[in-house]
Image (cartoon, rainbow over all chains, first blue to last red; front, side, top):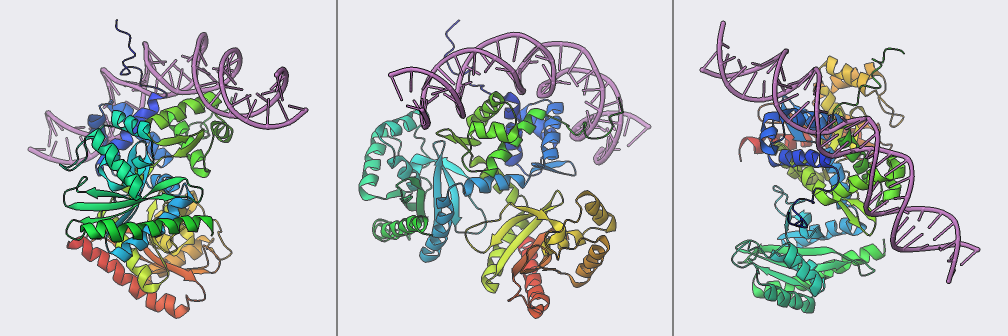
Length: 256
Length: 256
DNA sequence: GCCGTCCGTTTCAGTATCCGGAACATTGAT
DNA sequence: ATCAATGTTCCGGATACTGAAACGGACGGC
């Protein structure tokens, strides 16, 4: 038999029961009000296993059952908020996002990297449809480029290798060399731009946010339709405005 | 040996491995940047068990490890947001809370009941210190009284029996009869008041929010210091203002 | 520079407990 | 009244979870 360093078999590390639990939670998340039958089908675990797990989760209060339908419970909000306020800077960024949104009257977000993905942490803009918690590929967004620009070439290469440069739109950077060049530009300018690389018709600008002791926190961004996001606006006004706000966060962290 | 129907032993229903997992997560939540040693102590599970579980959780991406310290990951934000937008009404309430906060220049919240507790779902007010996801006893808050007022006497009795009427402040209603009377008043008036029953120096007003088909969604509240929350304000202006907003939510749900 | 301590990682055997097929109960629809 | 579909319970069997113990590495004190 071939030496099975072919990673496929060995990756089942740790506790498989827990994996089942979270597989169920993910399945719950994807749809509104799911029944046991739905879940057995969607996870192809046997009915009795699904039943037992859900019983545990509802007993713990993490899953809610209302007349036969199961829902993810609010206990996860508690856990999530813990993550969102893990670092003081995250809370400071919340205010910055709000103010940015108000001042520019465009969408503003604060984004953090986790597991090589961009996670929306704070957001200003249309009150419905919060993208909070959503995850996106780093290389397709201004905010993500800012994250990648913090890494050295080795780090970026590793990202390219492990995640790949999937094309989200026709404009997405998919060529490694182009990405390296773009990141160098980001480092030079101190801000990153996204020109319909993540969504057609949308441009964005992003700057890094640092703590007083030069720790990278995340990226602060503004984005909007190409019609309003002219070259001047994107390369002139917004970068300085964003840098100002990033600076304010830093000051907030340094003094009260 | 005595017949052990003494419930103490039997409540371990379902999957005990999952219980361990969530015990660990709760321990993680309570403190910033926890090490394996910390967790073994806090959960008194053996070191190797903690290790194995954390390995699984980080592998799944639900827990983050950074130089020896473990943190709850942003994946929980995703799950939590699912709960927060479970019903369309919840998102509609978000806007209402925001507007209410702006108009009154006081703290405003939207609260939902889960497992006989009040859960903060949306909040307007001091940008730091979000209480989102926090859980409080129903009987000590205006919003909670609104929830209880939706139940019949049997339902309320069950609440009293199972949860109890703990005193949070000297003003908290701890007498069942007093609670029944208070709830009757709430039903009559259509709004609930909280007079320093939850926190000294704080008064609050709350009204129920219904969907177009008369489903109870949650409660919309405004609260603030006793100095500003005079009797007139609390019993006159705020109730009508709140009822208006609750009505708007309902209209939003009915049409676009 | 050595030793002791603490902490994370790994190993391993035993068995608790998780699993899942299958039977049973319940509901609802035709 | 019958049937189908779903939720609940039961139970034997083996998986895989557990936890004691040993290992290795890092750190700090002396």
